[in-house]
Image (cartoon, rainbow over all chains, first blue to last red; front, side, top):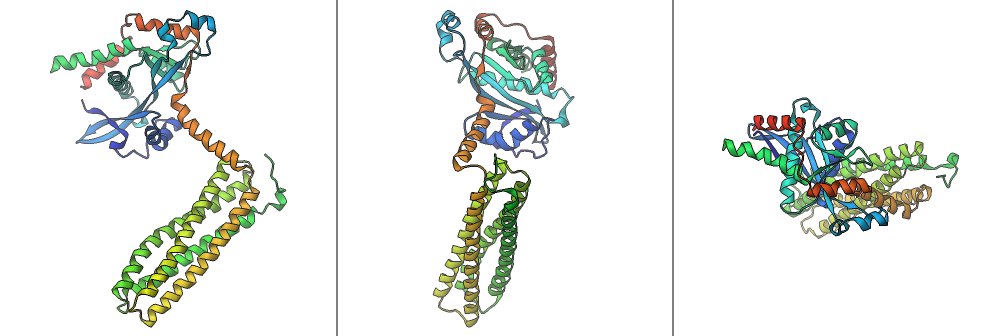
Length: 181
Length: 224
């Protein structure tokens, strides 16, 4: 596969990175390293390997987020199972962006699959109940929901994919690789 | 936010002019030092010891002066902006940071001149011509000391002028940091339905991938 994920410090960031979302461009070029060093999130660069050179096509950032139950009314909290009253966390797909030069080439979906693979790998070290994503706008929310994420009732831009579904998708990426080997 | 001083009496103009004057003074000092030191280094009259001292300090000075020159230019630009945006905490913060940077750079440069001067005096084989260089450094030191006093005055004036207190700046900087962190760590506000949905998913069997995800997986395998 000519596509690989690299860490932020492995490559020089492209100053002309443009995914059509100024906030996401700014994040990669100005905040990603800082956020990583402060322990806020980890950013992975999605690259294509051309003549043994890695070309950055996009990126995604992962973090964890607590699932805050404190604002629920006491009656609802009381009815919850004991484990849910503990500090449950979810993995957060905080950012996902593809340079506009590569839009329309089905690379966005490869980027999403790579992010799911990274999430699955992270769960082997630190577990959580599933994957949450904050979609930037309606189009992004449609993209995520078409690929299996469910909108939360309060805010349709916040979507969730249960852990088991992430694992099932990642298992399918491995299956055929195993057959071909 | 309102200005403590009425706009018609706003002395920002003089601060802007002051910054521009300082910028050109620093530029001039840089050019003069460059010429004098390069002449000195290339001349056979200079001792190796004196040349080495000058060479190493000159490299340091050159980069610091260049940085300082840019700081002043930026300060002037920010001050011009501040004239039209009178309640912009970002601009005020930038100006203060730039001026503080310029101030510490200037102190460094002044002290470096002093060190060069002192070391040159210890070089035994100084020719008469080298003494004239030494005097030149003395002059530069005094001129930079003057510039430092000017920037002290400019900072003091700007501090009197600005709209926000030190406390507000600190709170603002703290909020900016929080904002960066909040982009990725803000807790998801769940309602009872969301929470029930998430908790149910822990025990439910997974749904099969959507048709779009199926196609995506096929594409993924084609690319593998």
